Image (tube, rainbow, N blue to C red; front, side, top):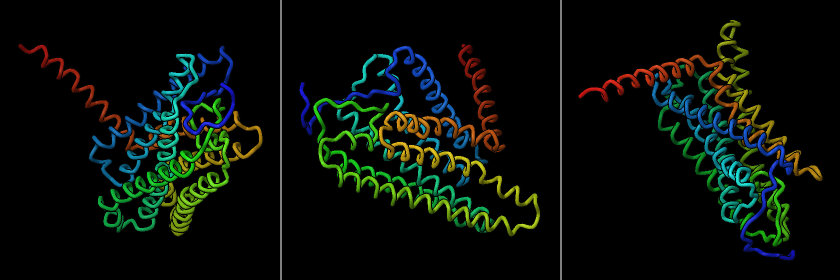
Length: 323
C-alpha cells in the first residue's frame, strides 16, 4: 500500500521502546513486574482504607481514589504493550488507539485534579484544624472527586472530538512510542495541525496549569501556617502530614515536565517515550511505597487487613471440614 492520506485508517504500528529483539524479554519482564506491583500495591491501599474505620477520613478517601486512578492509568497502557511484545506484533487498531488516547488523557487529568484536591485538604487540616471535620465533610469530599472526574471527562472528550477525530493520517503510520499518545498522533498527521496543537496546549495550560497553581497556592498557605508554629516538634508534625503528598506532586510534575520538554525538542521520539514511562508507569508504581513506608496509619491498617485475611483462612478451612 503506497503512502497517501486516509482519514479512516484501520490501525497503527506501535514501535515500542526498542526494536532490538534481544531486549524484548527484558522489557517484558520489567514492565510486567512494575504493572503487578502497581496493581497490587494500590489495591492494598484501597482495601486498607475501605476496611479500616480509622482511615475513613478525607485524606485517605482521596488517597484511595488516587490509587484507583493509578491502577486505571497503567491498565490502559501496559497490558496492550505486553501483549504486543509476547505476540511479536506491533499493531493497534484505530478504535484501540483512540480509546488509549481518550482514557490516558482522562486519567492523567483526573490524577492532576486529585493531587490539587489533596493539597486543599492539607491546607484545611493545617491552617484550620478546629474546623477541619466541618469544612471537609463527606458531601464536599464526594463533590470534589465528582467535579474533578467530570472536568477530566469533558476535557478528554474535547481533545478527542476537536483534536484526534479531525486528524487525517498517512496510510502507513508508525508511532515511535509504546502507546498512542496525543502529541505523537498530532505529529504523525498528514493534515494541518495548527488548530489541534492550539486546543491541546490550551487544555493542558488551562487545566494542568490551573491545578498546579492551586497546589502552589495551597503549599504557600501551608508554609506560612507552619512558620507561625512556635515549637520545632509542632512544625515537624504539621509538615509530616503533607510530606508524602508533596513527594508525589514533585514526582508527578517533574515527569510531566520531562515529557513535554523531550517532545518539544527535535528528533526526540525515543526520549519522549522514555520520559512517558516515568509518569505512566514509574510514578504509579512508586506512589504506594511513598504513601505507606512513612505512614504509620497505612502500615497499621495493612497489618490489620493481613491479620484479618490470615484469620479468615483457617476459619473457612475449618468450616469446610465440618460435616
